[in-house]
Amino acid sequence: MTVNVVMVLAVFLLMTSGGAAAVGEDVVEILLLDGYSAQPIASTGVDVYSDNGIRCIKAPCNTGGQSWQGETDASGVVRLPSRIVNKVTNVSAAGYAGAELSRDGQRRTGRLQLELDPRAKTEPEHIEQAARRFKIVDANSGQPLKRTTLWVVRSSSCVPPGCKDFSYSGPTNSLGNVYLPIFKIKIEDSWIAVTGYANQKFASIAGDNTMRMRRR
Image (cartoon, rainbow, N blue to C red; front, top):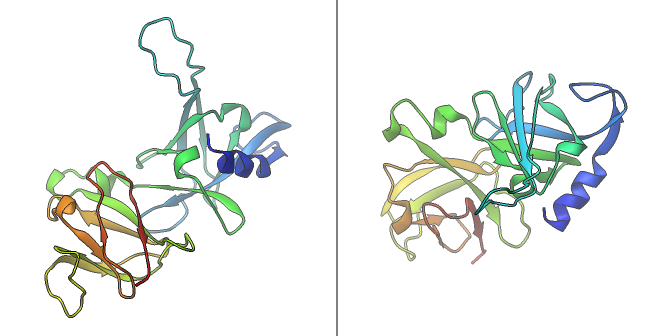
Protein backbone atom coordinates (compact mmCIF):
# COMPACT_ATOMS: atom_id res chain seq x y z
CA MET A 1 0.00 0.00 0.00
CA THR A 2 1.42 3.39 -0.95
CA VAL A 3 2.24 5.98 1.71
CA ASN A 4 -0.44 8.33 0.35
CA VAL A 5 -3.18 5.73 0.60
CA VAL A 6 -2.05 4.69 4.08
CA MET A 7 -2.40 8.34 5.14
CA VAL A 8 -5.83 8.58 3.51
CA LEU A 9 -7.02 5.43 5.22
CA ALA A 10 -5.77 6.69 8.56
CA VAL A 11 -7.77 9.87 8.14
CA PHE A 12 -10.95 7.92 7.53
CA LEU A 13 -10.67 5.53 10.46
CA LEU A 14 -13.59 6.16 12.84
CA MET A 15 -15.70 4.41 15.48
CA THR A 16 -19.08 3.14 14.38
CA SER A 17 -21.76 0.63 15.20
CA GLY A 18 -23.37 0.74 11.75
CA GLY A 19 -23.19 -1.60 8.77
CA ALA A 20 -21.68 -5.04 9.15
CA ALA A 21 -18.83 -3.90 11.42
CA ALA A 22 -18.97 -4.92 15.07
CA VAL A 23 -20.05 -2.33 17.62
CA GLY A 24 -17.15 -0.01 18.39
CA GLU A 25 -14.95 -1.45 15.61
CA ASP A 26 -12.67 0.84 13.61
CA VAL A 27 -13.82 1.17 10.01
CA VAL A 28 -12.79 2.82 6.76
CA GLU A 29 -15.56 4.72 4.98
CA ILE A 30 -15.44 4.36 1.20
CA LEU A 31 -17.80 6.00 -1.28
CA LEU A 32 -18.38 3.60 -4.18
CA LEU A 33 -19.16 5.26 -7.49
CA ASP A 34 -20.36 3.86 -10.80
CA GLY A 35 -17.52 4.77 -13.16
CA TYR A 36 -19.92 5.12 -16.10
CA SER A 37 -22.90 6.99 -14.65
CA ALA A 38 -20.81 8.76 -11.97
CA GLN A 39 -23.63 7.99 -9.49
CA PRO A 40 -23.18 6.43 -6.03
CA ILE A 41 -23.63 2.66 -5.90
CA ALA A 42 -26.36 2.73 -3.25
CA SER A 43 -27.83 -0.12 -1.20
CA THR A 44 -25.74 -2.75 -2.99
CA GLY A 45 -23.95 -5.86 -1.74
CA VAL A 46 -20.16 -5.53 -1.47
CA ASP A 47 -17.49 -8.25 -1.45
CA VAL A 48 -13.94 -7.61 -0.24
CA TYR A 49 -10.88 -9.85 -0.33
CA SER A 50 -7.53 -8.71 1.04
CA ASP A 51 -4.10 -10.20 1.63
CA ASN A 52 -0.50 -9.18 2.28
CA GLY A 53 0.49 -9.22 -1.38
CA ILE A 54 2.60 -12.38 -1.15
CA ARG A 55 2.13 -14.68 -4.14
CA CYS A 56 3.04 -18.30 -3.50
CA ILE A 57 5.60 -20.10 -5.61
CA LYS A 58 5.65 -23.12 -3.34
CA ALA A 59 3.28 -24.04 -0.50
CA PRO A 60 2.91 -23.47 2.37
CA CYS A 61 2.58 -19.71 2.01
CA ASN A 62 0.83 -17.40 4.47
CA THR A 63 -0.89 -14.66 2.48
CA GLY A 64 -3.04 -13.45 5.38
CA GLY A 65 -6.11 -13.64 3.16
CA GLN A 66 -9.40 -12.32 4.53
CA SER A 67 -12.89 -12.08 3.06
CA TRP A 68 -15.67 -9.70 4.06
CA GLN A 69 -19.19 -9.00 2.87
CA GLY A 70 -21.31 -5.96 3.52
CA GLU A 71 -23.54 -3.41 1.82
CA THR A 72 -23.41 0.23 0.84
CA ASP A 73 -25.88 2.61 2.44
CA ALA A 74 -28.36 4.85 0.64
CA SER A 75 -25.56 7.31 -0.22
CA GLY A 76 -23.23 4.66 -1.65
CA VAL A 77 -20.90 4.47 1.37
CA VAL A 78 -19.56 1.14 2.63
CA ARG A 79 -18.04 0.91 6.11
CA LEU A 80 -15.22 -1.59 5.86
CA PRO A 81 -13.65 -2.85 9.10
CA SER A 82 -10.09 -1.50 9.14
CA ARG A 83 -8.73 -4.93 10.12
CA ILE A 84 -9.70 -6.14 6.62
CA VAL A 85 -7.57 -3.52 4.85
CA ASN A 86 -4.19 -4.95 3.83
CA LYS A 87 -1.48 -4.34 1.25
CA VAL A 88 -3.85 -5.65 -1.43
CA THR A 89 -7.56 -5.00 -0.87
CA ASN A 90 -9.94 -5.86 -3.71
CA VAL A 91 -13.43 -4.38 -3.52
CA SER A 92 -16.33 -5.40 -5.76
CA ALA A 93 -20.07 -4.83 -5.73
CA ALA A 94 -22.99 -6.74 -7.21
CA GLY A 95 -23.02 -6.02 -10.95
CA TYR A 96 -19.58 -4.39 -10.91
CA ALA A 97 -16.01 -5.50 -11.58
CA GLY A 98 -13.61 -5.19 -8.67
CA ALA A 99 -11.00 -2.52 -8.02
CA GLU A 100 -7.94 -2.48 -5.77
CA LEU A 101 -8.17 0.04 -2.94
CA SER A 102 -4.52 1.13 -2.62
CA ARG A 103 -4.10 1.48 -6.40
CA ASP A 104 -7.50 2.82 -7.46
CA GLY A 105 -8.79 4.62 -4.38
CA GLN A 106 -8.83 8.41 -4.59
CA ARG A 107 -9.41 11.20 -2.13
CA ARG A 108 -11.95 13.57 -3.63
CA THR A 109 -13.99 16.28 -1.92
CA GLY A 110 -12.82 15.19 1.50
CA ARG A 111 -13.70 11.49 1.17
CA LEU A 112 -12.08 8.26 0.04
CA GLN A 113 -13.70 7.20 -3.24
CA LEU A 114 -13.47 4.09 -5.36
CA GLU A 115 -14.86 3.92 -8.89
CA LEU A 116 -16.16 0.56 -10.11
CA ASP A 117 -16.87 -0.50 -13.68
CA PRO A 118 -20.37 -1.85 -14.42
CA ARG A 119 -20.05 -5.33 -15.86
CA ALA A 120 -22.72 -4.43 -18.40
CA LYS A 121 -20.12 -2.14 -20.01
CA THR A 122 -16.88 -4.11 -19.55
CA GLU A 123 -18.29 -7.66 -19.75
CA PRO A 124 -21.43 -7.42 -21.89
CA GLU A 125 -23.36 -10.39 -23.21
CA HIS A 126 -21.99 -9.66 -26.68
CA ILE A 127 -18.22 -9.32 -26.34
CA GLU A 128 -17.92 -7.08 -29.40
CA GLN A 129 -19.76 -4.41 -27.38
CA ALA A 130 -17.18 -4.44 -24.57
CA ALA A 131 -15.78 -1.09 -23.45
CA ARG A 132 -12.73 -0.12 -21.41
CA ARG A 133 -12.68 2.83 -19.04
CA PHE A 134 -10.06 5.56 -19.33
CA LYS A 135 -9.70 8.48 -16.95
CA ILE A 136 -8.56 11.69 -18.64
CA VAL A 137 -6.63 14.00 -16.32
CA ASP A 138 -4.57 17.18 -16.51
CA ALA A 139 -0.95 16.05 -16.05
CA ASN A 140 0.03 19.15 -14.05
CA SER A 141 -2.88 19.39 -11.62
CA GLY A 142 -3.85 15.72 -11.56
CA GLN A 143 -7.49 16.79 -11.81
CA PRO A 144 -9.88 14.92 -14.10
CA LEU A 145 -11.01 16.67 -17.28
CA LYS A 146 -14.75 16.57 -16.64
CA ARG A 147 -17.38 16.76 -19.39
CA THR A 148 -14.63 17.38 -21.94
CA THR A 149 -14.80 16.40 -25.59
CA LEU A 150 -12.05 14.07 -26.74
CA TRP A 151 -11.13 12.28 -29.93
CA VAL A 152 -9.31 9.01 -30.58
CA VAL A 153 -7.01 9.89 -33.48
CA ARG A 154 -4.77 7.81 -35.71
CA SER A 155 -1.67 10.03 -35.62
CA SER A 156 0.18 12.22 -33.16
CA SER A 157 -0.18 15.26 -35.43
CA CYS A 158 -3.96 15.06 -35.91
CA VAL A 159 -5.65 17.96 -34.10
CA PRO A 160 -9.46 17.80 -34.30
CA PRO A 161 -11.89 19.16 -35.10
CA GLY A 162 -9.89 20.37 -38.10
CA CYS A 163 -8.32 16.96 -38.59
CA LYS A 164 -10.90 14.29 -39.41
CA ASP A 165 -8.66 11.24 -39.01
CA PHE A 166 -10.31 9.96 -35.84
CA SER A 167 -12.18 6.76 -34.94
CA TYR A 168 -14.10 8.06 -31.94
CA SER A 169 -15.38 11.34 -30.54
CA GLY A 170 -17.32 11.98 -27.36
CA PRO A 171 -17.30 13.63 -23.92
CA THR A 172 -15.91 12.45 -20.62
CA ASN A 173 -18.37 12.22 -17.74
CA SER A 174 -18.36 14.16 -14.47
CA LEU A 175 -15.56 11.90 -13.16
CA GLY A 176 -13.38 12.49 -16.21
CA ASN A 177 -14.07 8.96 -17.47
CA VAL A 178 -14.77 7.72 -20.96
CA TYR A 179 -15.63 4.14 -21.93
CA LEU A 180 -14.14 3.27 -25.29
CA PRO A 181 -15.39 0.38 -27.47
CA ILE A 182 -12.18 -1.63 -27.54
CA PHE A 183 -13.20 -3.92 -30.41
CA LYS A 184 -14.06 -1.00 -32.68
CA ILE A 185 -10.97 1.11 -32.00
CA LYS A 186 -7.35 0.08 -32.47
CA ILE A 187 -6.31 1.57 -29.15
CA GLU A 188 -2.69 0.39 -29.37
CA ASP A 189 -2.25 2.40 -32.60
CA SER A 190 -4.08 5.53 -31.48
CA TRP A 191 -3.77 8.76 -29.51
CA ILE A 192 -6.18 10.70 -27.32
CA ALA A 193 -6.71 14.28 -28.50
CA VAL A 194 -8.20 17.04 -26.33
CA THR A 195 -8.38 20.69 -27.34
CA GLY A 196 -5.51 22.65 -25.77
CA TYR A 197 -3.48 19.52 -24.95
CA ALA A 198 -0.78 17.57 -26.77
CA ASN A 199 -1.95 14.24 -28.15
CA GLN A 200 -1.30 11.34 -25.76
CA LYS A 201 -0.58 7.85 -27.08
CA PHE A 202 -2.26 4.86 -25.50
CA ALA A 203 0.39 2.83 -23.71
CA SER A 204 -1.04 -0.63 -24.42
CA ILE A 205 -4.24 -2.64 -24.10
CA ALA A 206 -3.09 -3.86 -20.68
CA GLY A 207 -1.55 -0.56 -19.61
CA ASP A 208 -2.47 2.21 -17.22
CA ASN A 209 -6.05 3.43 -17.68
CA THR A 210 -5.18 7.01 -16.70
CA MET A 211 -4.36 9.32 -19.61
CA ARG A 212 -2.29 12.27 -18.39
CA MET A 213 -2.72 15.13 -20.80
CA ARG A 214 -0.10 17.88 -21.05
CA ARG A 215 -1.01 21.36 -22.22
CA ARG A 216 0.45 22.57 -25.50
